[in-house]
Image 1 (tube, rainbow, N blue to C red):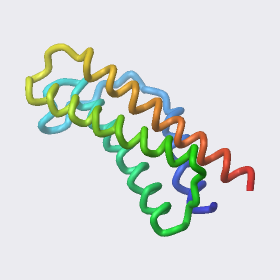
Image 2 (cartoon, one colour):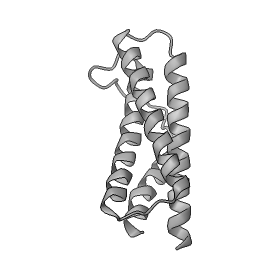
Image 3 (cartoon, rainbow, N blue to C red):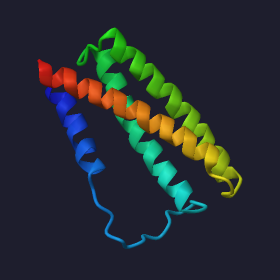
Amino acid sequence: MKKLIALVLPLVLLAGCVHSGTVAPLPAGAVDQTDATANQTLQTIHAFLAKVSADVQSGAIAPSATQRAALDTANKTLNTASLAEQAYHASGGGSASVLTAALTAAESAFSTVQTSLVASATAK
């Protein structure tokens, strides 16, 4: 339980960060701000889901059937969003509608998993 809280708490705190208004330069290789933001978002979700999956496999976390289904959905939406980001990046930008929809689905699934795991950890 302590591992789970240690994993989730920093992500919750980062979600509340306020933008200072200063625009940072684009990371190397990013075609535009949308590409850079999508990549950063996907890396964060991937790191979280990889850690949770490792904890499930090691027995550190024992998710319920509902939580396992949410994890599966989160991993599937992450894969879809990753493919959309790769296509957006390869095209040099362009229309972000497919990428935005895929990111929204991945963020929603991520949030569901995060909320569910935090709720079950604090209930124990």
